[in-house]
Length: 236
Ligand code: NAD
Ligand code: ZN
Ligand code: ZN
Image (cartoon, rainbow, N blue to C red; front, side, top):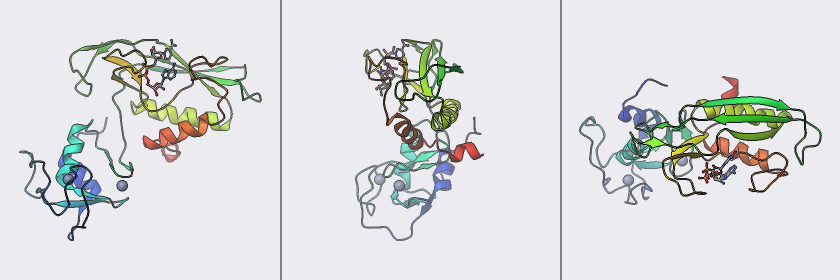
């Protein structure tokens, strides 16, 4: 994990104070930017962040009360990354709350429906039950793991292999699963898929998470991108 940075430093790394406050709303607190943020200055925060300090994100240029951004950051996983609440641009490296487990990759000679010209990549995720950490909804309580190991399938072609490499990055950044309430079963405190869809059926499509699906690889690439996992991550 990255060395812990003070929340205030993370905000200042990715936002610069604007001297002239634009005539717009802050979409975090819904107040005018010219009015003070409703959030209080945290005790550990220096005097340079005040309720009326307005900042601009360095790349996308969207503006917010800097205290509102600080409150949003403190509400999240505090991993040193920021996401613009307006355009979703990610600053730094977004990480998730996926519990400990294993990701294994195998090759299957058989083809997937819709991909007759190549074999198949099989991913097996296995996560054992455990105790929730401070980053989870109910710290100290156990979490369950249903339907593990979970088997997933990709076509073994150029695009499928690229998706695989990006899924490995997402796994390392703890973005594939999270702990929460399953929307399928309603069970709370359980390990669930996060925002990156996987195909869990190889030759059937009973759940709707199977093949054929001509848009799947493009869809999962854009889901990965919205978590900050792009081809650029593979060049480093
Ligand atoms: P969930 O129901 O909270 O849904 C989260 C996301 O996962 C949603 O985007 C949903 O569309 C997607 N999703 C739902 N069912 C899926 C499936 N079968 N395959 C791939 N994606 C799916 O997430 P959850 O509780 O983690 O999973 C849904 C259910 O599917 C659970 O009951 C789980 O046990 C079961 N499941 C079982 C296996 C298995 O091998 N037995 C594999 C995968 C999922
Ligand atoms: Zn605000
Ligand atoms: Zn933005």
